[in-house]
Image 1: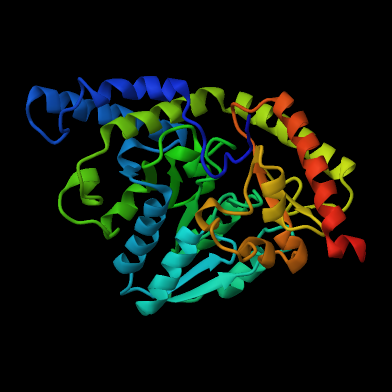
Image 2 (image 1 turned 90 degrees about the vertical axis):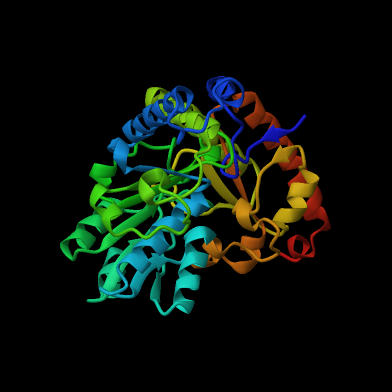
Length: 386
């Protein structure tokens, strides 16, 4: 039986989410744009869902835009601001450890004539505020820095960033895909203009995402999908009603059970890390030990390849990095950015814990990994030459 420690890639759906969605696959099927009574009922359900999602991040309902994924939300935020403010400036600031949905979008915009500064990070994976200040120019229109990293879990100082940015009238976007459900999120406290997250990281279905856009930002945000006036005219297409209901239910559960979830997940992660680091020699925790979300543990196993360990310990489902780049043979760009030795970077695995994991799974996984590491190191020329 498999042990699923890859919750940062995707989470299993919560049964309560599935239950909430069920009616919208059968009897509540009407198009929410239809003006007849069934359509109006569905529209009301969507707007209640929007209020629930907004409440979970301390936003207003009219600031919530439903999309198809976190990646679409990131694209919509970054491209929307870039094209909407291109007359004011064409300079964007981001970091070297962002998710590919941000990095690839920025690379695309460079081809469109925009200039992008990719900030380095410290050894712990956190940006240097002084470096950010130096990077700001008169034509800087957007800063996009993720709230929590998807590979090492480090939390960025977003409140400091937004304070600096707002003084200079620069828009701030934060990718909160890995932060939602793992830490409290209050958009007014963070000070961001734009925030994105997705359903399948919070026990809702794949194929649904959220873009929070501060009310005044919507005035100049340029849509990237045209064809209708859905989602305040910013995202054309008939709404995916069952999935909207699903992500709203997931957000409701987060609001009610966040503290309990954090305590449970952190306990599992800390026990797992403690045993791995203490019982398996030559293991290294990557990233900051304290300034990170409760769910992620990125560990390098010296002298072996991470992919080989995944094969040997195949009962333990984990990842060599971001799920969106899992078919790449290159080591993580995040680990390179925090100056992890290239050999150790190739021996790194990301373990991510969730609501439905147990301590029994932790103990069993540790034993499987210990046995697999021992077997692989016996075959490793690097280990034998150390």
